[in-house]
Image 1: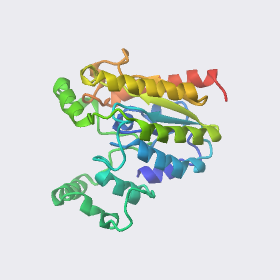
Image 2: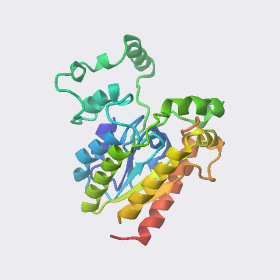
Image 3: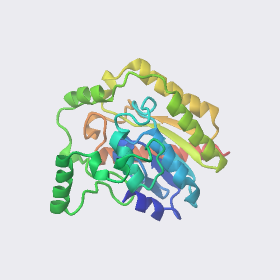
Image 4: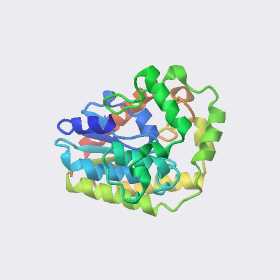
Length: 278
């Protein structure tokens, strides 16, 4: 569905959103003034952001802006590590991508059901049988299943579990900074502006992450802005406009929080891009 609706937006989309679940659930194209499509996805790394940009960017007729999220995990997440081990086959099969980290002799390229356990596959089939779909996003690419009504109750406990899962103890960002620089240069050559956004998180999550790594992330994004005339940075990580009530869990906005965040990003886009032309 993501791939089909991406292609369907070739003629009209002016804004593309990339990133992981924070933007998948946190940036809703409905609240942007310009025609927008959300190409982010759960645990989507900068490696796959770049592959998607390389594949699609030339085919969008009106594309003016790319929103690229820079999260606590983004700059340190190396390609073909934990999150990519099985997802890479889905990008190859369903997003019609050429994925260099997949070996041409890898059997999972041909039998994608082998990337999940039998019980996981059975759960998917059962869910499809009863619900008639396993799709959890709308036609604009926004994730629809993180609602305010179903939000997690204990954000403090959720934050501890999530940070433990997220922390890779890496502060060498070379691989991903290089990927971002290549994206920025490609966009610059096409007159496309790049908006780097660090999405908001709950107070519980923000208080527990490693400050040295967090500050290096912020500094890296600011340097990318400083060094590139087509690049702007919006840091919402600990923004006072958000409270814990805006979150589905420790680090994801629910649908109502996403409305607020989308309007803030849309306002930033309008403000910054009316000041600077290149």
